[in-house]
Length: 289
Image (cartoon, rainbow, N blue to C red; front, side, top):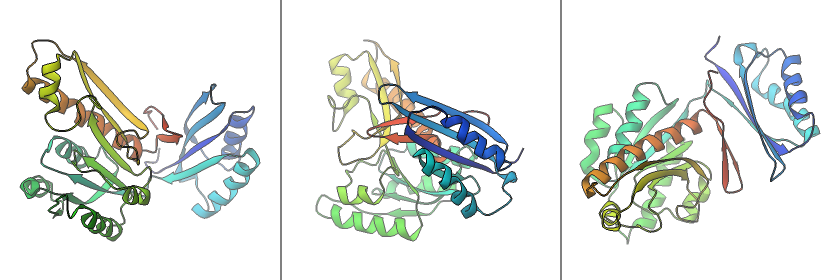
């Protein structure tokens, strides 16, 4: 089996015969279907599908494949996109002082668990440059204040264009992106935050969680939108805690959950397992394809 795959993500109004017509098309074009996942939202009357094909069966150009499938898509009123695993996305990581999420992303990338290139790390604290150096990734230090933040976002945008960036990962980057910035990269910015929001926004959330005697902590990874921390959710996780937990132990547990949730969300995006519908996501589980 080839490691080179073609993935189609499809959504449409639910109706009879969609899976039959789509899979018949791929069969008649000579493709081996490695996996076919589907979900029907009966409330919204919507249908979602992820099809993974063995790309060694592609006997003509990519553009020809898109053109041929577009005819089927038009007849079924499908909204679709196609991805080729031969194309690795360029991912830039934005970071601040805290490094646990940054380390985890870089470790998984180094182990080949994240299918991407990381051409650059951008941070507003030079103290974490050693992390980038450890993994041999270029580091761009960008001092940021409240007064220069708008101008600095322009600098970041120029760097993203220069490096042909496909995905931005906010690895605990403690700045709020402007609407203009986000609109340049809709559904291409993944953020992570602890699950205390909005009750514990701002500094020292785990100290305040301790003071409130919380019994559960967690983290949420989502696409960034104009509405702060309210974008489509990709991944979440929680862990129960008790009265015996200290601010320090809560912070450690929270950090572990944050890095796990963020790396999962990034992997789902890079593996093309996510379809955004409104302010929700359909996330197809990992398979052997």
